[in-house]
Amino acid sequence: QATDISALTAPVLCDGGATSVTYNITDLCESGQDTATFTVTAPTSVSFDQQNLPADIAVECDSVPESEILTASTSCGSVDVIYSEERTDGNCSSSYELKRTWTVNDNCGSTIAHTQIIIVSDTTAPVAPSAPANVTFECIDNVPVAGNLTAVDNCTGNITVGGVDTFDNTNPCNIIITRTWTFTDDCGNTSSVVQTITVIDTTAPELTSDLDTDLTVSCANVPEIPSLKFTDNCSTNVDVVFDETNSFDEAILDDYEIIRTWTVSDACGNKTTYTQTLHVTLDEVVTEITAGDKCYDDGIVNLNDYLQTTNLTGVWEMLEGNTDATLEGNIFNPTLLELSLDFKPGTGGIDYLFKYATTDSGCVSVTYVSMNINAECTVLPCGSEDVIISKAITPNGDQWNENFEINGVELCGFVIDVKIFNRWGALVFESHNYQNDWNGKAMSGAIGNASKLPNGTYYYIIILKDSGLNPFTGPVYIGTK
Image (cartoon, rainbow, N blue to C red; front, side, top):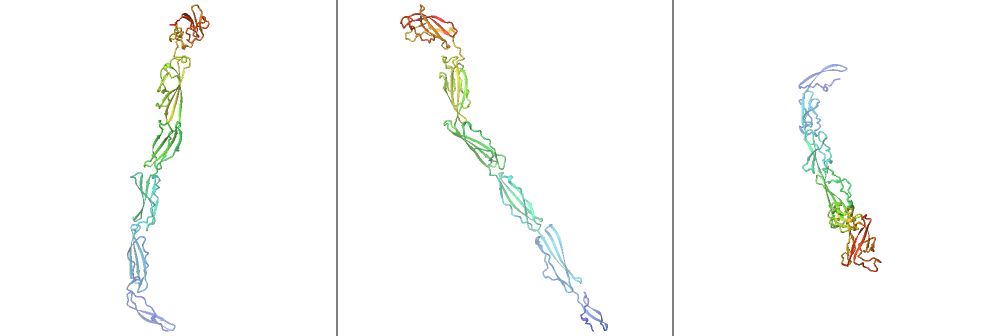
């Protein structure tokens, strides 16, 4: 059986031309040789299959495309595409150059390559979050510390930073804080958000003590001004101005009001007022003073010396006592008193009561001063040389020498025993408590029935009982002229 050598293949020749190939053919019946001649043309090029190869581009770091898959063809045999990528860093992590190369080699040593340059850059700032809302605080101490905010970056991931404060203290009572969060990526792209914080004190100091704002009190029991404490929400310096008004009128002497006012303010001029109103009932405050005993001859007395009030515009009056002693204003003059049976040593003196009315500390002030004026400092004339006895009586109605009188010791308190005798020794008058009232009238049964003793000289015996003095004797003439 013959063999068809046309179906046989020849080796590939890369330089063209013809070659002969000898085939040894053997079958079951015979064997032999045959020769065939082939003409082979070598490939001249290799090409990529794609019409539009990847071009050079410049992209953002978040837009770098995936490498394309390229294929190639050759006129002689098959080929593989070899891909390689080279990175050259720039000045930041998101700025660099990519060099992508696709290379094709065929079996005959032909080579083609395609290079794409990708310039990668980061020019996009991080996407900042929304800024916190602007806020206002009363005090600087209430302002919270700046917290952290996070921005989203297109290349390097999230960026978290803290806020930074700048202060405008031009007006210490209206401070403006600008709180800024600045987000910067590796390539220096920045974004920021700003929050404005206003610190303005609008609250006045507050009262921290208890205060009765409305009281009804007696004028004698007006409470002391309370010591109050105040606190401010922002500072320790509180200015307190106290004022008190009093509607008391000495000309009216009626119930009145005391209004106490505390005006408190802070350094920013925030001010408030606290008030206490006292409804004062006008009472009479009575003071009783005992001045003791004084001798009338010791001199004048200044009654103001006994006052406990400092208001000396009031009026003195004498309520009890002998008005022979005078009161002029505050000067009491007891030296004008005269000794008498009722006012002498041992009689106990005269009790005086004085009243002083004025106003004091918003009340009607009444002072009663009592004192005893006596004559204990006086030595009475009670000796025998002080006794004055009438020498004559002329009971004729002319008011001169009308009675037989024993004078000079009236204040001594002696009981006088008197006996009158005529010249013959007959008793014509007798009294055991003589009161200087005998005018020559005959004692009943003394001399007949005559009512008047005849003119003439008579004789007396006078005994001052309990005086320690000897009896007094002597003549007394009774006449009509």
